[in-house]
Structure formats: C-alpha cells, structure tokens
Length: 133
Image (tube, rainbow, N blue to C red):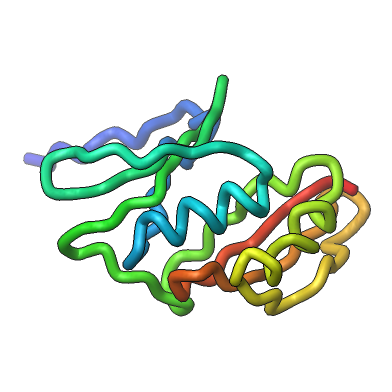
C-alpha cells in the first residue's frame, strides 16, 4: 500500500503580500513621520490593546503602523518596500526633515525593475522605497 501525498497547489497567486504592519514605539511620532514624507493624513485608532494608523489605499495591498505589546521596531527584520510613486526621490528628500535617516540613496536595480532606496524611520525600522523612475 502506498501513502497519500498531499497535492501541491497548481495555481499562481496574484500577490503574495496581503497586509503589512510596521511596528512602532510612539504611534504619534510615527504617524507624523509618514504623514510628512508622503504628504498625507493618517489617523490613530485604538483596536483592543493596540494603537494603529492605516495607510490609505483604494486597491491592492494595505498596511498599518502598530503600537502595542510585541510590536518591536528593528532594522534587521523583514524589509518592506513602500511605493515610491512616480519618482522615489520626491519622498526620499523629506525623510531627514521628518526625523528619519536615508541609508541608501536612489539606486538603479535595472531598466526593467526600476529604482530603490533604503531609509530608517523615526522608530528604528529599516524600510525601502521602490519606483519605476
């Protein structure tokens, strides 16, 4: 008698990212930082034992800043690439004025993939920006 082997999923997943959370120590400071660099207006909400602020989105992947038990910022964890819009330099130039630090300036990946840059936010998280131009 043979054993039953589980079937592998044969379809392709459209997007592997469904949601992301960026851990923060000071939700108000973090909200101010991301509001400044993206020129937007995130609001803080209380959910159970956490404070959260949601990145505005119409379609696609959403995410939030989150403060609470177990939310520990790090520069050594998973690297999240945020949308750099048409030219990531427009956002990157506001990082230091908002209290963050640019780690790697706009860098070409290749013509097909576009550009990326790295920065540290006010909470100690290392994040990336990506744009096609």
